[in-house]
Image (cartoon, rainbow, N blue to C red; front, side, top):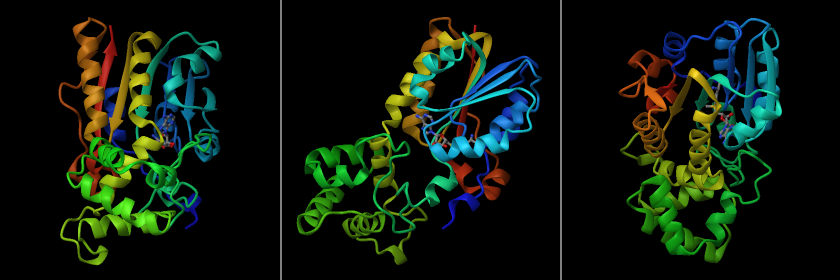
Length: 301
Ligand SMILES: C[S@@+](CC[C@H](N)C(=O)[O-])C[C@H]1O[C@@H](n2cnc3c(N)ncnc32)[C@H](O)[C@@H]1O
């Protein structure tokens, strides 16, 4: 599939626009610039004194965002880097504090369709999963070299799959005859372990969803990166500045919820969203990716 043709529909856009307003000279960090769709929305409200600093670990995202944001009058700085390093990246640009930090976690539809990413169980791709190609360890390295117990623990911890032991056993058994090198092979092994032929599943969720989620989180250090971003935000936000995080699974959402609560307890944040904001049924019908999205917002005191 030509992934440049895959359209990314940003989630919770209207809600974000209702909740967040930036002054014309505001500075925002889009920690996950992606296609730049969210940034375009906020960028249109910024004047020449305003700025957007966009970060992404996916090289193509930087190119795409450059094109989507080219007509904005505000300053646009796009950096191919991990949001775990947000503070040093912003300071390197000569900016001390910002008014808004947005993180729309996870991946874009184009990344799922990109063969080089090796993220999809819907197509047969090399089993890679590194969103940032500068990382060393691929998903294939993990499934072919990790011992059975550690593999089961990883699938349980990051995928929350109760059948993790059985899946790990099947993976280890298969790799004894030949290495697992593609997403299709891995998806089949998981289906076999769960005795769910690909064509005849009852649940609407593919049986390999959780195993793939677990490997993606492990390969890209996703939870560790999010913890670092959340820990950096208070030091970077101006007074009354806001942080908005859109997460797509409970492990991420729990980290955001606990971080905001702790900061509120310490008098650093005021939580704007007592409960996470979720998309309307109408948005979910328009965009299936939105179905598990949760938005939380906090304000720096
Ligand atoms: C859901 S997309 C963002 C879409 C974007 N909000 C838009 O409107 O187009 C998530 C993006 O975050 C990037 N990403 C994931 N983890 C990252 C990290 N630790 N640091 C920087 N970018 C990351 C992915 O490469 C992907 O492009």
